[in-house]
Length: 271
Image 1 (tube, rainbow, N blue to C red):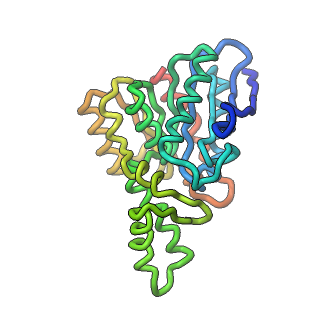
Image 2: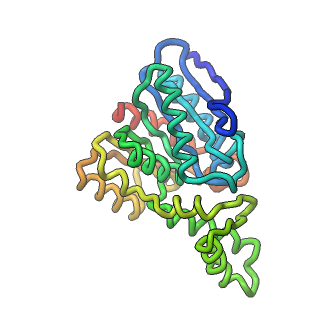
């Protein structure tokens, strides 16, 4: 099916956000809003997400990808971003989709983006389906992993004190510089408060995909635990594992081709 890709800026002034909309030539069957990964994982995952967006559009979906405040090609620096400004960015994306005739969308998320999507749905009182790629269970876990990147550069005799120093800086309201990304204390606080448990209150279906093992192997214990919590709360959940590299971590371009057909199958169930 023929598709059209439109690159544009959404919003005005300092709220301008870089977007890519991919759609079929005819009427769309529904909308998908992509909530991207955190920090450098956004850049490393772009090729895989571009392939997926094209495949989703070919299947009849309108796909909107938006770079958050201080991310990618959007205005602002990483140190300017806050959790609330990222929530506001998703509000802008929602308004654009509504203008296209879509009052509801499936949230397609990756890694830290899963946490932002969960937080946004909770704060805005929305109940939308989700397609979660390799979700992080909590913002506290994600922030800890991110701060540990400093140990790669400063892992000498003082390395064991680095995490304590970084945490202290954030607690005192100071920003920290990690691998070229400046993270404010406000953003860190918003991230640490985020959890996938926020999705327990919804009724819309969700689907979870992990990458890395052989197709059909067991999910990670963390995902199994999270799925059990959602199901106990009444959520309808599907999940699977596909083989492929951890493309969001790779310095070179890596693809997980099995991820796309698995996502398309799960999107059918979410529609």
